[in-house]
Length: 417
Ligand SMILES: *[C@@H]1O[C@H](CO)[C@@H](O)[C@H](O)[C@H]1NC(C)=O
Ligand SMILES: *[C@@H]1O[C@H](CO)[C@@H](O)[C@H](O)[C@H]1NC(C)=O
Ligand SMILES: *[C@@H]1O[C@H](CO)[C@@H](O)[C@H](O)[C@H]1NC(C)=O
Ligand SMILES: *[C@@H]1O[C@H](CO)[C@@H](O)[C@H](O)[C@H]1NC(C)=O
Ligand SMILES: *[C@@H]1O[C@H](CO)[C@@H](O)[C@H](O)[C@H]1NC(C)=O
Ligand SMILES: *[C@@H]1O[C@H](CO)[C@@H](O)[C@H](O)[C@H]1NC(C)=O
Ligand SMILES: *[C@@H]1O[C@H](CO)[C@@H](O)[C@H](O)[C@H]1NC(C)=O
Ligand SMILES: *[C@@H]1O[C@H](CO)[C@@H](O)[C@H](O)[C@H]1NC(C)=O
Ligand SMILES: *[C@@H]1O[C@H](CO)[C@@H](O)[C@H](O)[C@H]1NC(C)=O
Ligand SMILES: *[C@@H]1O[C@H](CO)[C@@H](O)[C@H](O)[C@H]1NC(C)=O
Ligand SMILES: *[C@@H]1O[C@H](CO)[C@@H](O)[C@H](O)[C@H]1NC(C)=O
Image (cartoon, rainbow, N blue to C red; front, side):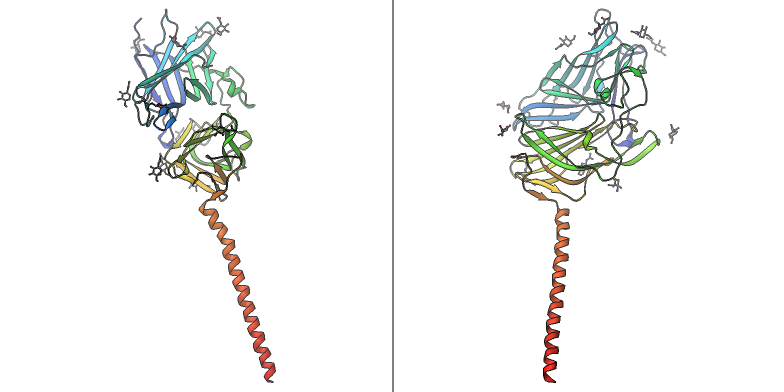
């Protein structure tokens, strides 16, 4: 009955040179043998009551997440469930229980435990203590002796929360100590034309990377609220300036990559003082924008940006985010516009170049942009033709005056003769 978790390891596929947060590796062991191994990234979106109404906490599963040996288990003869429980921060936990029969294993349920007393994640929460929510419909299953693989983001709703996994490779009831080379690929990964078929030998075939640079194409993106009306509008061409470790070149490269509008879908949410736009490209790029409205000053700005990417040439998932940005400032009831190329620095490893940008994250009334407040660069560029025009007009005037004076003089001259 008693389990000795000789080694319960949390490894980080950590790459300091990348700067970004990498996927977390979690292992449950019994004696010397591993029964569950998971490599994944996860992010949480949790709605909670706060002093300012309903708020949403959004945060990733941190690098520091560790398998809890007390509540994780490989299962016993009498209890065929095995548990992977990762704990992080002050009293937060994510648990997956696995069940199996002769041919398949699956996640029986997902448990999320979060501590509302943690004011760094749940600022202004009007209740405290630990909340536990469970979901029994997770939809993760794979053939025995194969690795479940899902590079695409997979969202699981649990209570008022959403857990989004990405770059996931997991196996339970493992025959060996390492992930089986044969993979069961999730549906989301197989719907792409280039994806390998379900249950295939591990291969390096992966999704196409977003198209290489040039000037990026434009697209209009929108987010709708629950009654189906647009509540956030955005249009731009977007280019990633990203530094990552290249598999093919075996070194860190600085790359310019365009977002491909035809392969990009928009989603997001609109709240009173916070709006998010999430752009998902195919199955390997997720870019989120968070806009914040200050209801006192009626000013809004882009406060957060985050990118999760798993491109074919990457050795590990790329992740970069910054929640203390001060970009795209404008006023409630107006849109923000910047036709000139603009650079949004997110982290040392990532910046975004925007082209012909216009956004309105709050106060959208007619499914159309309100009057725009233009960025300084556009205003400067508009000044150039005005200055040139004024200078030309001045020149014409001077020439005209000189001509008139000259004419008068010569006229007077003739008269004296
Ligand atoms: C674990 O491995 C060590 C060294 O490889 C060995 O000495 C020990 O007996 C093993 N323990 C079990 C329970 O298999
Ligand atoms: C907590 O927040 C909810 C929703 O904003 C509100 O209805 C409730 O009265 C609040 N409770 C307390 C104790 O402040
Ligand atoms: C919840 O968070 C608070 C504040 O960080 C901490 O004091 C408390 O111990 C945590 N609760 C649990 C069960 O870990
Ligand atoms: C295992 O479970 C799956 C789904 O629950 C079912 O379709 C399959 O027939 C089961 N296999 C056996 C051998 O019981
Ligand atoms: C989740 O799994 C545990 C362990 O089997 C079980 O006790 C619990 O009832 C399950 N919860 C749900 C909602 O299915
Ligand atoms: C899984 O692998 C183990 C060890 O290689 C083997 O004993 C078992 O029969 C395999 N099970 C299936 C369903 O292939
Ligand atoms: C849609 O809902 C928002 C609040 O969620 C409300 O302000 C707006 O008037 C509604 N629009 C329509 C057409 O019902
Ligand atoms: C990309 O980023 C690097 C490093 O931050 C910078 O030197 C370079 O000028 C940027 N390139 C473009 C086209 O924005
Ligand atoms: C990558 O580079 C390192 C050192 O620069 C070298 O040791 C390693 O063999 C290289 N790997 C490949 C696959 O070329
Ligand atoms: C709104 O702006 C005012 C003035 O800049 C500032 O004092 C206040 O803290 C801001 N409120 C929020 C919620 O950021
Ligand atoms: C976030 O952006 C701010 C402003 O550009 C910068 O000062 C800060 O260093 C960035 N934080 C991280 C973690 O990159």
